[in-house]
Each structure stands twice: as C-alpha cells, then as structure tokens.
Figure 1 (cartoon, rainbow, N blue to C red):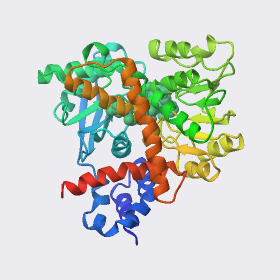
Figure 2 (cartoon, rainbow, N blue to C red):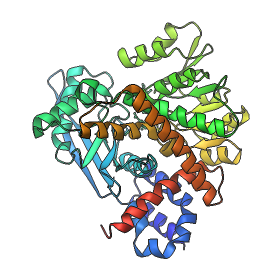
Figure 3 (cartoon, rainbow, N blue to C red):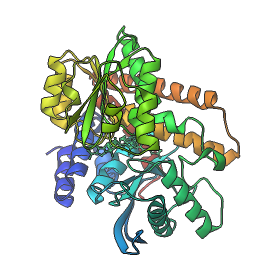
Figure 4 (cartoon, protein in one colour):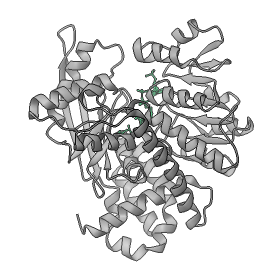
Length: 444
Ligand code: NDP
Ligand code: 2IT
C-alpha cells in the first residue's frame, strides 16, 4: 500500500465520525500523490502526513449565556490549532447550528494550505460554536460572544493564534469578542482580525474575500484569452463573501444574476442590486423575500436552485457541499466555463471531478478565497507596526497576492504534469512550503 493510502486509511479510522474532515483530507492527500511519491522515504520516516493530518491541539468548551428571557443557554465552543509551522495559527470563527468538531477540523485543515498559499507567515486554525445568531437580539449576541471569549482568551494571542470572522461572525461579533479579550487580558493587541476601523481593523478586510475571488477569477480568464466583461455570473450565498464577490464582478463588467440564503434563492434578470442586497442582509438581517419584494426584476424561489441558471462563470459562496454532482452536470450542460470557490469546500469531490473532466476551469477555495485571510494577515502587519494603510494600498496588495496565487498554483500543476488541475496545483504549492518548514523544525 502506498504511503498516501496508508495515511488515508488511518485518518478514516481515527476520525470515523467526521465526514467533512475525511472529505477534505481525501481531496488533499489524493492530489499530493506525485509529490509524496517523489519524496516517499523522507516523508514517511518523518511521519509528515500523519503529523499534518493531526491537529497540534483542539479545545472544546462550554459556553453558558443568559437569553433575553433570563433563561441560561448552553452552547459548545471550539478552537482547533492545526499547524503553526509557518506562523501563528490563523483562521475564522464559525457561528452556525451545524458546527461540530469535524466541521471545524476540516476548515482548520484547509486553512493550513490556504494560508501557506497567501505567501504570508500564518499557520492554520479554526474555531466556532453551534450557537445560532439568527433572530438573537444584540444583547444576546454580546452575552454569547463575551462568554465564548472568556474561555477562548486562554488559548489565543497576537503571536499565538489570531481568530477572525466566518459564517455568522462579522464585525459586530468580532467587536464584542475583542472588547472581552481586552477586558480579561488588559492588553490592546491584534488578537483578532476583521476588527472595526476605529480600533485596529484594516480597510478592505470586509471586501477582501469577495474581491480577492474576482481578482483571481479575472486572472484565470485573462490567461485563457477571456475577460469578465459581459459574462453572466451565478453566485450562491448572500453573506460577506457573496456580496463583495457580486460587487467586484459587476465592477469588472459582468452581470451577476443570482444570490441565495439558507431558505431560498433569487434570480434577478437585471443583475443583482448590491445596495439593496446589503440593506436586506447587512442592515436588516432579513430574508431574501425582502429583496424580491423591493425589486420587480427579481424572482424568489424556495429551496436551492441557483446552479440551474445558465451562466459563463459560477461562484459558490455559501457553505460546504452546496454544489453537488447533478448541479455540476447542469452547469456543464448550460455551457459554464469556470467555477471558482468563494466558500470553503462548497463542491463535492465527484462534482469537482466532473467539472474538471468536462473542461471547466475549476479553482478550489484554498486558492480562490484566500484573499480574506491574506488581508487578515495584512491587518496583523498594520497592528504590529501600529499604522493603518489606505484602502488603495491594501487593495493593491490583495490584487497582487491573488494574481500570484493563480500563477503559483498553475506552475505547481505544470511541474507535476497536471496542467490545468488547479486543485492539485493549490494543494501542492500550499503543502511544499509547510513541509519544508516542518522538516527544518524537527520532530514537533
Ligand atoms: P456569512 O455568514 O456572511 O454568509 C453565509 C451565507 O451562506 C448566508 O447567505 C447564509 O444564509 C448562507 N448559508 C450558510 N450556511 C448555509 C447552509 N447550511 N445552507 C445554505 N445556505 C447557507 O458567511 P461568509 O460569507 O463569511 O462565508 C461564506 C463562505 O465563505 C463560508 O464557506 C466561509 O467559510 C467562506 N469564507 C469566508 C471568508 C470570510 O472572510 N468571511 C474567507 C474565506 C472563506 P443565511 O443568510 O440564511 O444565513
Ligand atoms: O475561511 C477563511 O479563510 C476565513 N474565514 C478567514 C480567516 C481569517 O483569519 O481571516
């Protein structure tokens, strides 16, 4: 049995109740086969694959808080510190009722390779809770965030582990958590990113994941002799990533015709009105039915369905496993040329393979959505030097990072005879840097 297969078997056995984690590890290890085969003796002797698939440590803790009726509620909190070979642990905090250890581990594992691809010195981690922010008052959100940070503060720090936003965690939640960290520790430090602009946040961090996704997509199109101008784009999600992906795609001259949330989706023949979408989702925190009610060109549909709309480019920006094999078939049948992932692992393995086999240019989330965490690392740099850069300066750095990521993953795929396989290219390029650091640092 090959070393990759041995470790895959082991990971499946040891983590049998964590399907998303097994899915993420399977995708990465399968695509690393040529690199591992070229260095099999060295990697095996140093147990590189066993070490990279086992978190450095994982915390699980009780989060008690009092709701507006005076009732005590209890949630479960998580932080997985996966790998700090190239820098402090870095990765978001997800607040969603579906959160469990396996989901946080899959996200933390992916973060190792994504963070390495940014070219910045950040290791991989992730956290969150099964707390559901939907329908909660601001006071309830604050009560939860303060309790969550009371425990989390024991494990993080500006040079140790720097959390940020993810699903359900935006500027409001980061603000409450930062306040509690400061209160407990008595230090004002860049322990979280995605902070408000008045207390150490970076300009362009809010936009960074969506904008970065489009900078990479544009470079990919350009390298295939195409442009974004006049293209029809289908986006899923209606949160931070989806909103700013839509805005940047439109600035590039494309027409984005869909968005979706956890209950339904919108088809807007005139193109999504970003200002209205922001009002509905960021200000009112309401359902997409409100978007449809305010916009005559928009149709609202219950359930899922954006991938059935004809498009040139599809950008999944909601959550994991939201683009399935039948969706991939529909996209190919409709002539879609390009799929770039704004979300983490939104496309299942069989759907990914179908898209690749049918000539769709497919870039996975580790590369395509790395602009968010890259800009978080730029926020860390600004905090360290106690300065703030202009929007233009941060945005220019972000563009440069995303263009470089595209070329690095393209080159890595070519080096191993897999031209056009950007999934393999991203995993290989991300892995190479981390493995070199791990080998240099000895057994740890
Ligand atoms: P938000 O919470 O801002 O938005 C998430 C969106 O996806 C919402 O529209 C939400 O619907 C929808 N959604 C969430 N869960 C589900 C579900 N189980 N089924 C259907 N729809 C769902 O999160 P973000 O935009 O920040 O994150 C979106 C994705 O991008 C995630 O995969 C995240 O990990 C990834 N990502 C985020 C980065 C960031 O900087 N924020 C960076 C890199 C990746 P509803 O409105 O109903 O809740
Ligand atoms: O998935 C991700 O890369 C994020 N949620 C952003 C992490 C970060 O530290 O900015």
